[in-house]
Image (cartoon, rainbow, N blue to C red; front, side):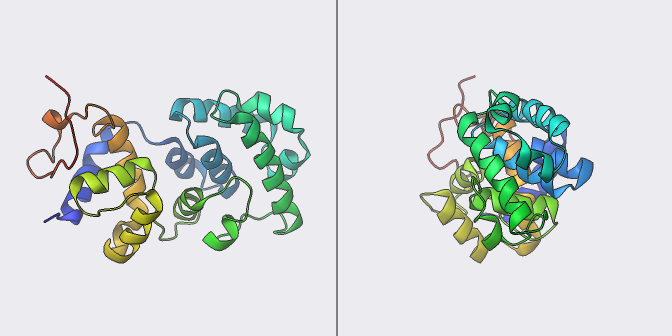
Length: 217
């Protein structure tokens, strides 16, 4: 049986030694909902270091919603290159900025129902914005969260959306906001998708290791 509280509390201390995911870092530095939203959109399918550099370049030229809405998509694309799908994201960023101006009076909405209406914003992005920018209980499930929760056997699901729904029913609410921050860092640094470092993991003796092939040592 998975003692999810002990797992997450132990890992929270462990991942303090790891690099902080870029969106969480931005949230700690500013709590600026605009920056958190834009950085989260940029981070999809993109390495953290690339997201951090692209976000810095973009925010230097577009520090607020108004300036981003006025910026040509080609310029946005040049600034955020080489994030994944940068041309598509450039279009989404400009459209999102215009929607925020026209519909939300320049404010970032703080509900998942409104956030997912913005171009380029899915449930993962919306939940992360709610948790990081607005400090609201939300479960952001990316590939790391989905994968690790299934490795532990805490859930048995086939997609991140199924995992989110299962966690909403099962995971104690006090862990909702921390689960993404902890497991993304853990998944990047230790419990990797290929050849995870099970031999050097603090949960090695407890983990079910479902469908896991550890690295060879």
